[in-house]
Length: 246
Ligand code: SF4
Ligand code: SF4
Image (cartoon, rainbow, N blue to C red; front, side, top):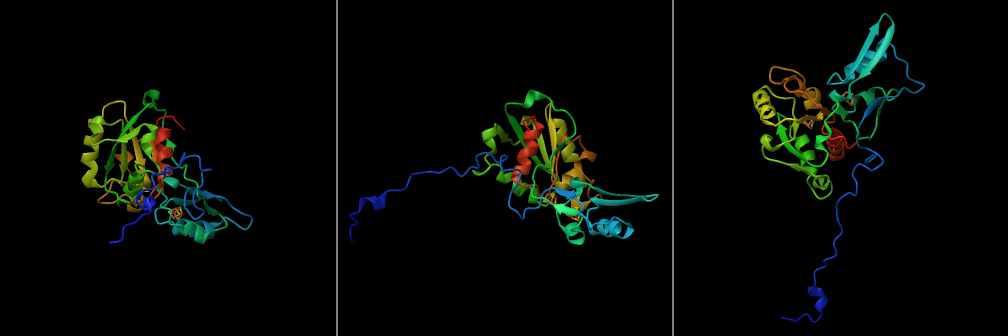
């Protein structure tokens, strides 16, 4: 066998560049141009709201996130991002009114949360009947790109060790009792975060014989993070919002 005289061939390149995004939330609030984030009503000059356009829009939405009302000729369109699964149908039907932005800062807080959670946070994730799309994004929080532990936030195995319950899924009737038990097992003070359109409102599953139509029908929710699924930055934004870091 021929001996390799070039010693540098045997050296492994140890130069290491961190894969982590410096600050995932300082990305101008925008991601890839085709990412579907916040949906807004932004009528341009060609849009006329009448019974026909209102009904077309309402019927285009599979989760009833868009509702049209005609109260004695007072015409209104209402959009609920918590129910939106980002399918894009409404924008196809009515590009003169609907704009799907690529902003991820969708989370909403329902009440003021105690500052006690400022320094570190233990999260217990609960899948209450999700399709696992949300879990894939939650998993990404722990990878070297998003690296949630740099914020002092860790995932734990038991609700008894948790400050936060991060809940996905509509929740299914089969998970209703388990979710209640997990909530009761989490020490006070605690935060509940609903992740994804399903947990926020029932999402694509809605409220039917097998689901409960959103986890706030079972446990009190402090923060809602819409999306289907919400991307890691949206999750991080919502979690940091929960501990008053946003
Ligand atoms: S993008 Fe959202 S609001 Fe529009 S039709 Fe789909 S679910 Fe409804
Ligand atoms: S919000 Fe979307 S991705 Fe998340 S569990 Fe529901 S259907 Fe799946």
